[in-house]
Image 1 (cartoon, rainbow, N blue to C red):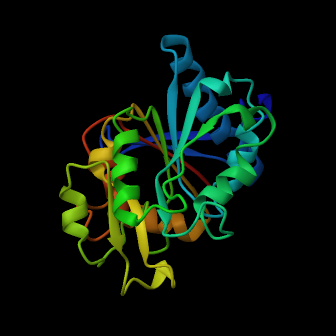
Image 2: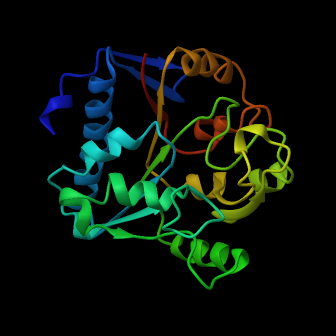
Image 3: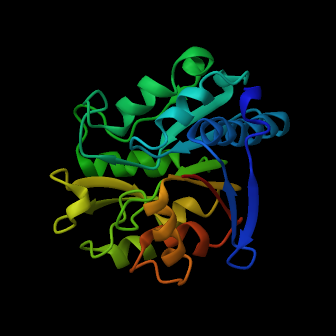
Length: 248
């Protein structure tokens, strides 16, 4: 995990004290820099308490970070890994976030981590949400978020049916319907973390790559309304500043 210690090329505080932007010159630096940032916080948590909880997003962007993180010399048997969101699919489905996390993070040293999936065979979506909220009574320490081309995060999409209800929910997780949201594709029924579920975390990270995402980020940071760009919950929800890790 030493490969990323000198990877950070610039750090910028933006949006007042709400956002700190870490930029890297290459994807390799970004990968290891992000992995080291996550592992350092987990290590600190484990020095202070018996267990810690890590919430992860899906998608192709964070996959190399998870692979690098899997090699971190942590007490992984004391780390609970869970998901920010999930499509209404079984955990072993190729399109599920659970499958991604198993194939990228839960390898090498991280194979000893305890993994909480959001879906399970024989459990309907309401039961799955209830189970997720029970798990969420053990608050997360670190939450790793992503940002879609439309400014969504987790499974909170702009223009989504029931978005206001999800944003205002007091539950950590809710079921959502992404009908009418093109970026959601054909998998419309989902379970998503809410701002209430994000708020207890002491560390929030947003992992993004590419110039298009950087331009979108500039627009996102110009306002505060999460109904326009739901990813804004990452820095408008009360709690710690958001750490954004970006490379071209």
